[in-house]
Image (cartoon, rainbow, N blue to C red; front, side, top):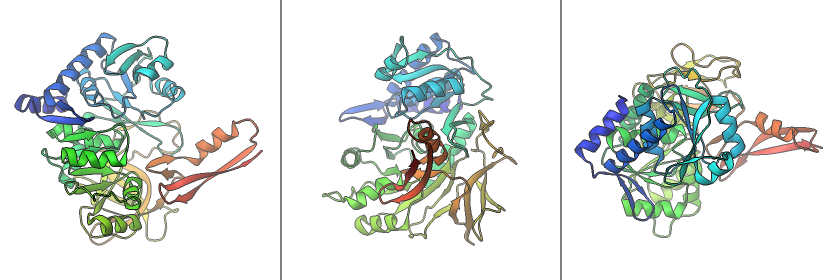
Length: 426
């Protein structure tokens, strides 16, 4: 049996009425209720052929069913690939074909548009039997979507042991306890949400207040109502609160603030602490590696500083001709590094080397072991925590009627960090 399933089963046995998910105004999901939903999902998925080496693709987003769905897939040893809830029908169909999904789980409205026939799964989720033969998933429990070093969608082959290692490293480095309640406003489909929200819940019963999207006033109301202590967010969320201070102040219970997905600029961190007296802690990670570095201190750091290596993570700086002076390319080795990409034909070189992962980031380390990021080896633009590749936008623009040539670049954006700007010739 899956180790993650066993660990959550122990929580259910010892504390069946323990709240693990708060959603909506009065909706509370207990450990035993989540377990029962997982059993029902497992039975339903097995009846349509989900099992070992049969990929389940899910666009469940931040619905409560996303967590028991992962448990069900782990029980069946069926690899799960969560995708962004905002993906279009065309993108979903392309992902299913490219990555070999045998089963596709979608919200009811999307399922109707995706296929002529679908079957009810749970809540408003429906299942479509895609009937694509499984590929060689090499023991993966989860396929994390990522862009890799090019603009083509990729999926990392992440084994269950790697998920557990990442979850335990995050729990240990950040001091997340079973008694904590976390704000769940980041996507559960992303590596950040899986490592910081889903794994603490399943491994030690850390509850979360789950919402489908970031709604600022709702987030603060949830914090006060459920007494949440931990808020994993992205820089633009904290920038919003700095620019729009809540009338009744920052919730006193919301003490551990974590920023990842994009670089947290010094001005945002300073403004936030000056207004609310609370420090935002930088967290650096990747889909391919899980958590890499974390700044646990309360001091305000200089631009790009992301803290020290997580427990069990080794950071090495490799020589690179394109690196800024005094910097090297960040290489990560740990038990949480993924096995590799499902598709490698689009990569000019395999970044999974020497038992670790060669990131696309440049950086340097000070004498205390703190890592500072100084640039990117790739051309990806980071818009509100989401990486956008100019080459992909250029390709789409060039395919549009009336456009002969296109050039896309990054530009500063006060709210989202960066934005993309396109120049076209028609």
